[in-house]
Length: 143
Image (tube, rainbow, N blue to C red; front, side, top):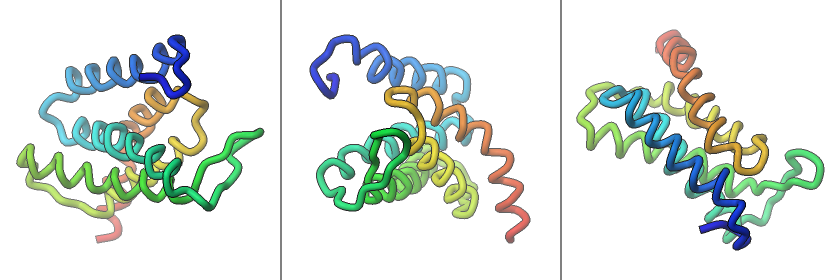
């Protein structure tokens, strides 16, 4: 389950993902914010490395010796949007606000790009959750 086979990687990667998703499910159960956080972390951050490693040709430096691919970052953004659409549809939430979702997907993608290895599972949900009020305000102003 770890990327390199090193068992210590399990503590910050898959274990933190599981703990964070459980906490989001418990504390944000039945709220659209929970669905948005889960979509960005589960779908966006989940597909970014898969697409980035397989199809990533255009690389950029995040910080000292750490690279990301444009293709992986675009996948993070697009799959975050898709995840939000799927979750909102399945959960029956009446509101659909593409502007709000796009801002939250952008926040999640930016955090995924710059966060230290294995800390993205903690930082993405925090950033997306705290960006929800801002995204709603901006989206409301743009209507």
